Amino acid sequence: MTKSLPSPSGPLPELERYYDTAPRRGGARAEDFGPLTLFVQESAGWPYYARPALAGDDGAPAAAAEISVADVERVLARQRELRVPESFEWVAETTPSLRAAAEAAGLLVHEHPLMVLDTSAVRIPAHPDVRVLGAADPLLRAAVTVPMLAFAAPGTAVGEAGPAELAVAERDPASEGRRVRVSGMIASGRTALAAAVSDGEVLCSGQHIPVGDVSEVVGVGTLPSARRRGLALAVTAALVADALDRGVRTVFLSAGDEDVARVYGRLGFRRAGTALIADRPL
Image 1 (cartoon, rainbow, N blue to C red):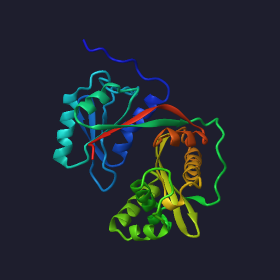
Image 2 (tube, rainbow, N blue to C red):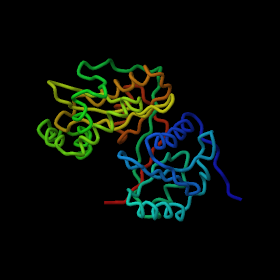
Image 3 (cartoon, rainbow, N blue to C red):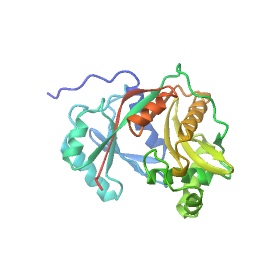
Image 4 (cartoon, rainbow, N blue to C red):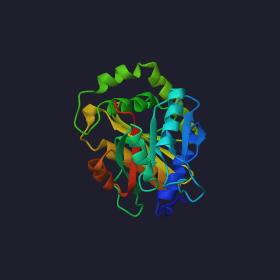
């Protein structure tokens, strides 16, 4: 008989339900692979990943103690067939066996602090240069492009890419596609986007994605030349305020590393677990 793990406690079951629901709400279809679910984007947008399947409404992953290398390899074969990224995302504490299986299948696993907002904690005041953008805001195209430049030059050090590089990136047709997609999501209430704007230039932006009374802060990125000004923290604070104004009860995020997690701690985010991402090494 297979030994199962105790059901996760604290906020993790709620986050697991969110992780299972958000891709479906974002236009992905779910393919069943036993203890794993592969989410496949059926429209333009974020290319999703595979995750542990849920066993029931309690948010516990199915067969949490017994995901095997064979289970992972079946999903990888399907991802290759579909020509989508070979990637998995999960929470270490709720599905501990998946890491060893993913690594045995040749994937590289990255760790990220998983943090949940303590709504009783003190948060920093609103920043005068940060605001939430509407669906028709003329700066929306720049705002959805800034994170692309930010993530192309990871880290917190000040970099070279600035407004001139942003202007070039905005001329890419893919930038307009992102603007149209995010505009529709804003209009339908499926996302909110906040941006730091100075002298008409977007310097930092990010989103939160509400599903019921839970929302994840995602994609916060600062133009490399504008780093070390506290803009990412200010944008995150604006997103938190917007989420709470919408009636969201649980706000969470995955920090890039422990140093970034300490910064988010100033907003009232507290460590709840470890988010793991597995993909093919470059």
